[in-house]
Length: 434
Image (cartoon, rainbow, N blue to C red; front, side, top):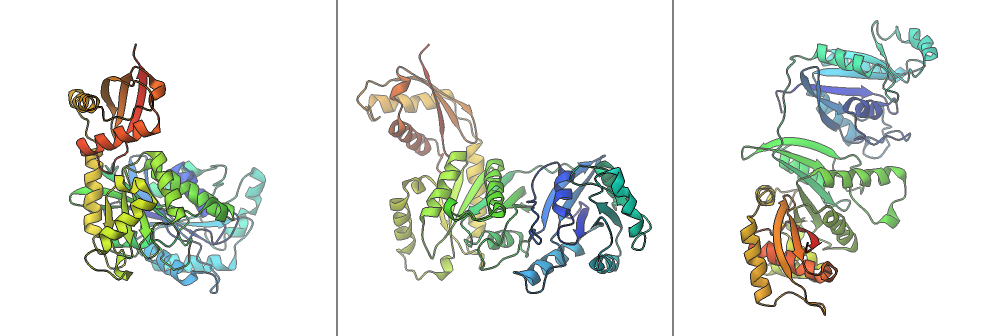
């Protein structure tokens, strides 16, 4: 989205950049914690304010210790985004200027772009007394409280006045795709492969991605939003609040997506954690694709893929419900096919089937006595589709209590097969005859 101005929040660690980012977008999108250096990737969001549209970036603190984990990769990624910034918000904090703040000002000035100095954590009128300490750095600044939303509207007004152009642009997203999987399954590498440049920090260290990263790009004339999420581990291995909230954000990303790409590490096959993640996705009833990553690292012949699929389905029978594609995010193998499949699944999930067609299928099932009876006389009188993506089928039956798990499963598999809903979960609502 090159025609939309970019605003970046810049500052030291723990001055409140992520809190300010959340205050501006009015969502808890960026993870906030007292631990320094929490933000690793640049987190972005579209903002509409006073008839102007811009992208706001939450950036990592650049005063990272050289010996800290991923410090150089994080700095380089942040600097890459700063080069594409149109307006900077330099965030300082009470009670005084820190030595690194002078370095940040010099860095920002080199870009020759407008910048706004904001003093954070001015929560009360008494805190205003320390503002004179900041005149050495800037003659004009805004006292704000990101936590209490103090002067946030004034800051937004100042940002809009500093933009290179002011116009409102509504971005219509055609398909939102969430990338979900275990740590180190290759989600950030796949995001970078889709975009064609290094957008997310990639490392062999599990848990590198913490925030969910949204990025929009054009593909086959469509606006695609890709959401890269933190890796999901088994509940017993979640050992701190940061990882917990990262997983909460990942689950939220699944909920807001149209299609989920569940990324699995082909070198280790489907694990118990993968099955737990698949269950989380199933609970959301989202159209899903299973992408087997790192396929380039697997010794193979003409039977390898089918054998791999068979083993997956044996370990997790629901895998048979979804398209399975082998890819290499690193070498961009079949990622074009992966996106085309995601668009196809999303398009099919939007289709509403005529009531008559659904009832013909149900009638044929009952004529052939194919449906599990579970020791009772079960009859479906009428069926209709009441919603799309995922499809919701309302059934009017004689005995709702007979509709148990294997009946639902049988009907779902049959409708997926007959109505071209492969990869799309089906929701059933059952009512007794009135």
